[in-house]
Length: 123
Length: 382
Image (cartoon, rainbow over all chains, first blue to last red):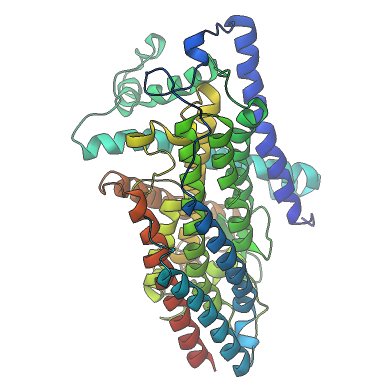
């Protein structure tokens, strides 16, 4: 078969969207015709352990999550550069290996720096 | 049979192949939710679900009681219940995103399936032909790229619920998933350093990894779990974290966040998250099997081609293909069992421990592992 291999990725993407949509609309139709919704104040309220909800749901949360996100961005870009390195690894000259080790060393150095600054400690 | 197949139009072939894969993967995902209940029961010394049986089925002599004991009807009635119970849409949620999130959760689960090879047969020249839907060169990269989209579903679900517990669950989920993604990607790099041997075109294809593990000779037939145990360990631990399985179930964490990101969900939208989780688990096990457990080779140092010779199957590609798929699925099911074994054996981690394991244990371990293997492979091959 000569179809383009990426066609399957697109096909499965389409199925992945269609399948839940189909089932959700079946459930929706069922609700519409056989099981009319009966909303009430209790059903519509925020779930909070059975007690009445207190305060706003837009709570403050630790800024520390952002630090992890920033660190992730830095490292993930570096890790992505390592993948082409792995593909062409054995055809590379020795100098490229050394260069790549320096690159990995920079990645490790970033980790050591963040560790040393205490960014990796969950406080 | 084969002529009939190759006479079909390519579009129809494609559709049938896709349907066949879905028909294999999704029953496994469904059955593993039942297996989870039965296995947890066995670990805790309970019988597990064993009562439900429809009256019209109860008269079947042997099969009826057997299925009843296995709890198959519990699974079916649970599935039906999900579809037909009231589907609440609480007033405080952000409706478009609230409905979008479970649909998004299905995308990585479905799409990654298409780049996973399930088996192989040998063509007339004796070359192994992998049975896979999309034989793309980027293989593992496609799995990671699409698989990591799953984090959007969790964070959108948490945010759109507009409620405290789901929000905290969504934030925790995103931090956990991104933390373990780094170690996961780094842990598979040594495998591809080793596979892309001199004189071959470089590739990240998963079928290539299996081909590499089915060569003759001692080193050729060794599975990568023996050559790179640290990589396999880091990959497996990161996989547990990426699929939100215990002991890393921070996104849900029933104990402190009620239900985590899906607290406000019910009925079918809720079950979509779970179908996605179990399919993610199935695909993750499949990738682990391909990378480290030799794919469709029955035993270490016993490649599929030897089995084909012993059983005289070399000239019947259909039977050999089915055999290889059976071997591969057997390993995947074993790997799913290990998922459940770990879940019901280890206590869950605290959140600070999760972050500590991810960033201060697994990531340095993965980097050191990469450096050691890069140097060792360079020395061996040059």
